[in-house]
Length: 158
Image 1: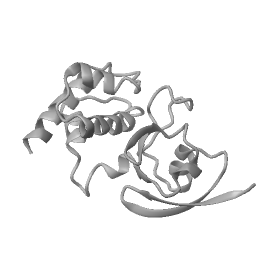
Image 2: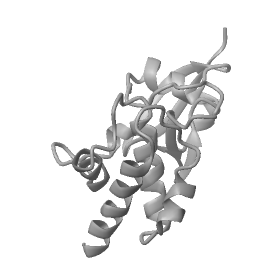
Image 3: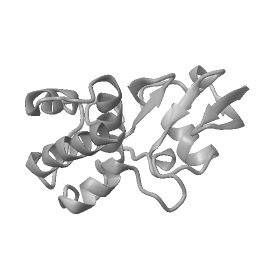
């Protein structure tokens, strides 16, 4: 099988990897780069568990060929916290108990961060719409929405 040499940036760090044409970005992140925070839920782009940003655009990494990462910037859940300091969204998810099993949580956090970068003052409806591509089988969504709204308020305060 032919392997492609890919040079990219992941969470601000320059990385290189080899991948086969059929490998998804999700497979590359987990299997080649050992970044296992991004989860596979469905493998068809329907659940959002594998959400990452690719050049600032929210994508389901299970649908993106790994070779498409060439020259691009990828942000994963591993890049949200800075050292021991959790991102405000991560703190608010803990404070609001907005998680249970954790399979969907990384993707929801990435989607929420993407939403708040585009819209720092979303309404409840806008949060629900912004997270509509992320399915949670355990919690329901009330605590998740509350956590995102609370994080947005704190982020706006500075």
